[in-house]
Image (cartoon, rainbow, N blue to C red; front, side, top):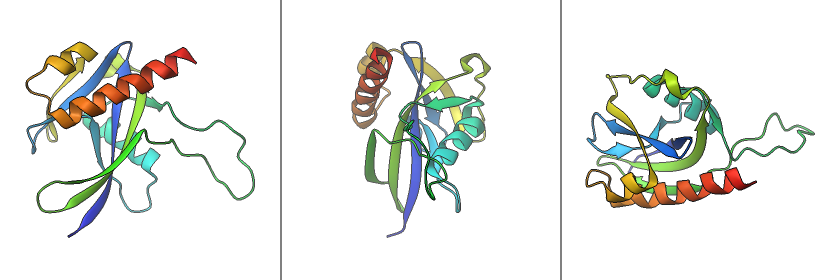
Length: 151
């Protein structure tokens, strides 16, 4: 079975996370998509966020130590990685936590998504429209976000 590399990011602003209603899948998901050829995961996250919701973000788990030797740049560290099936193929999903640097510029690309909404932790937990898998990842993303703010 074909396997593609993908990224997803749980974007935070204040104490809310942004989820999108995916047009094809009809599911509430983090912003994300396929990593294109010759693209780093970080570049893919930024591109997908810009394409889907017109936001700029900062990935919160990027190492800050010195770039030395033949290292070009440091990449963000995903808080979670899995392999999941999307029907006709599998995805290796790299999931990140990020901060919206321009949250008020939110606008959705109606070719790809039906809606985008900022959810509190409690709203995610209580929602009948958010899958159990996304609820679990949101819970962990909120923990990462909280830890980031306590540093």
